[in-house]
Image 1 (cartoon, rainbow, N blue to C red):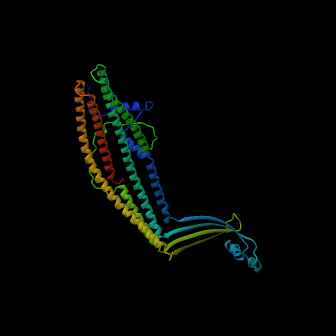
Image 2: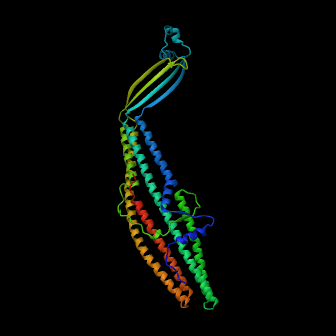
Length: 442
């Protein structure tokens, strides 16, 4: 009986797919497909896209500061007030000599007026609103950058979920190898017991080990289903699909990132700077609200005594210069509030930069340690496999007992699992490092 060295788990994963759920056909999925699907269907990313579109809509709404406002109205009025009744007739241009009769002037009776009005208001000089418009555009840019960072994070989460699925599959492959080895040892031991060459206790020890491996294998298969469900969550897909990842890629080291500093144009940092710019513009807007405003207005009216008439038309146009001199200190308090909000954003930006740099430095150290651990674990697997081979030969010759072989088998399985874990940790740390140094998408 010979045990093989740690190998790729392609065959093991194919066997796993048939054993986990016979009624399900596993779906092969590459890392690129997982990332692309996540970027398209992830629910959190769709919410971030909605926030970006809402901010862009607010920015377009702020364009009204330069656009005219046009209103059309229709009014039906009736009165017996002497002054208004005479005014109605003047507006309708229907005044005649009998209308100056004192008796009619004092007692005009019911008089009706139907007015159709077109009114236009044109903003001319409103500096506070101009700054608000620029602030709204900066806010839209901030949400666009936040959405970019959300996409980068979702891509990292998809990579993490995919690596977890690969690790779970590797664990199943290792334990299936261990199960086959334990079954072979069980058959060999049972034959020797039947021949009277070994004791029943040896067979019982092997049986205990076999049951323990079967239990761990069942748990590992459940982990594959759990990892598939988590990947479905990240990709925005329904639960229950069993995914079959690419095999062997965990043993290939991706290149380590060369950047050792957090880029200034990373999307989340650029978003905070856009927020700072928007806050500064809102402060200038509040200060500008203390300045005079200049607006134009014009209207055209039709007056008639009949509901459907348009007998008398007239226009009115002009400029309005207004200046609010005192608001009880409200503007001053709003400026103070805006400054505090700006200072908070500045502190948040500084803290985000420092924390990100700390995480990058830590991740690069961990990446170096993980690379060293991979080399050590690869050597440990080779040595454990050779030790098992020697003990199996000696066991067949009756020179060692079953406990020694079982311990060697358990050691080999453990080293293989630790090797898979070291590869997973290296890939995950490399992906996280790339996420930390991701530059802004244009």
